[in-house]
Length: 352
Ligand code: PEP
Ligand code: MN
Image (cartoon, rainbow, N blue to C red; front, side):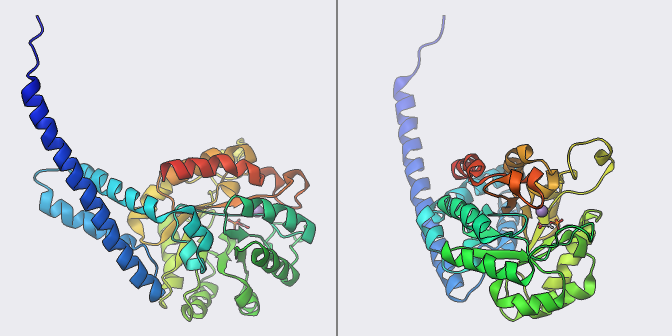
């Protein structure tokens, strides 16, 4: 015989739960209001809005205070809910559409940087960039100086490519991301590039990294440093420090796949180094992004690998997109269309 329920006691306890829930909601709202005040102070001083070392410090403090009642995982789970709510409120689409500086746009995480492997023509850029802008993407990538394996292949449009990239970024209210290969290119095109990209093949070019660090310290321009495809994680973190050592902390570490024995018979161009996201978060306070296009080399894997990367905590994605990948002059095999991004954007909006 099942025992009968004591409805009176349950109703009383439920009353207590309701009260606590109300208090939690009120506290979450107040916490968010205070954090908005901090954000606006940081914005007016042109500082990066989110501070990862502060998040780690909060978890450390809570663990030392409540460690006898809660496990670290439980504390992290609670803190993640608080952060997720705060970011959700902060992430309204209108705000990202209105963000007026590239540093502000990079605060809406996880962010998507998309665009063709290489800038080819006005027609290509018009068709591709209009499609990306329609999705609310504000960060436009486009290779202009292309570091190709063979000197006989198309090397990008160079200086003309930077101008075309800038033209379409301005037309569609976006910011430019492109790779430069040396100090001369960096200085010549500095004002047209909003986020400087340093490629995988240059990760160990320490004198160049030093120059990038010195030059970008003036205005703290964001720099994406891509992982060398044969480099260890520690080497990657140290390479980032070559740039940050002069005071520009806006360096973004980009994982882009590494070369392993898998390439002997895998269809993938590289081995996606997804696990490195977890470890890099421990090793560095810099933002970490993932490039699923070069990591896989296969367009049909790009969206799934992107979802995995943001689930593991990547702060952003760098994705190759073209209005017609079959026509792309470089890397068409790993390129997706703007409309292929819809599914990924819906996923991000739902979960982050
Ligand atoms: C790129 O992103 O355009 C590129 C050349 O990538 P990587 O340096 O990672 O090969
Ligand atoms: Mn490419």
